[in-house]
Image (cartoon, rainbow, N blue to C red):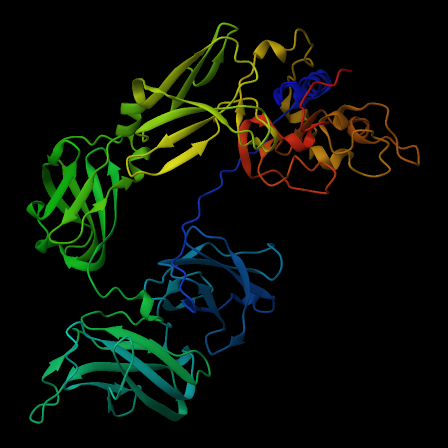
Length: 581
């Protein structure tokens, strides 16, 4: 029997629309996570100082923090200082940016706006005041964190391994400076160890790395400015890493880029490529002649190189003479640096992209008993294959692959002759950078159990021949709207509902609990409700539909197939056949 998910909603929807209007379901997109570079023992450290407003000083609060494009966690404030309270947060891995907000502890009754911290060095101190102003320094030294004694291990790297004569000149505010030698060596470079002490307390370490000779202690200075780093309240040990000609102070050596390279290149508009370098360069030092952009047809002409900063920058925009072909692979090289493959960036959100690739034809499968047309919109793919399977089980093997033809406006098309009702398929997309993704049909209305493969559907097999809608509702202000969840509505053990947690359980009439009170839909109607809003009932990811007897629960805000009903709500999620009334 065909595994048709569409069929299972037929009887359910017919009954619902006769009595109630389905108002809406909320759809949330799930973002892809950017993987952090996770080295053993490597963390991104942020020290967040927070001063609440007067009316919130007595409240128990916490911090919700997350790496950019990553998941968040709650962190307690661990102490107080002259500014307010603070938390030291260590996030595993390397993250260029960390977001945070302050919230009510263990609840969301109150929260600040989202804040974002630059953590490219792996170490950042920030101060958030009662007006939610964020800064990388305390508003006054009097409210800075304090410690009285601290041992510092300062690790230093020079690319030429020329450490002769170099030393550290360090001081704390209000005290004379002292010299420390690079007396030890490790796999990173040289290390200077020294102690800082002040009975009255100090808030930061200041230092200069300099080169001296017998005649001149200040013959040369590394960098244009002094370096400083704030302490954590009561801190007794500090390990920091620095590199020649780099003003940043790092939390871990793996954060440091010793050699220049192209980190990433992406197409941002139809004629612009963004290049991200590991280390900053002067804009004046990179000209169009320094950029080599190639594809399978040859070299493309460059007209301009720009950057947001006039001086040092590590983000550059390269403009091409001709529009770029998103279905072609490009390599880009800057001077003598190794070339990298150009990826797809924000170009897909530009008006030029819409003008070039907007498609208003039919997408998905178009079924007739004689043939089925397949159309997929994939303007950034190089090739697309239609993958057919020998069966409707999750592990059924591949039967055949069909290379699809390039159509207009970024589409790929193919035709399968004959009656394809019940055919199981996916799309296999190959992108210019060699990446291969396999996907269900985003426009499919039927899928196998757990939704990892789509199914061709004869729409006549699920079409409702006739039904009556409720009368038009002429006065929206009189609506009484009830929000519920398919599973919640009928799952109670004493609900008297036969199909607990299922679509059919929602529409069972005449059900009562052990006290003789109405349950389910009857209960909602008894309240005088005019409209029902259901939480998501499209196919979502996190419930295993092949194990219906295992207790599982989800609100449904993790969509997998938008146009396919959720299988765990089906009376028989494995066979998906219509249960007649």
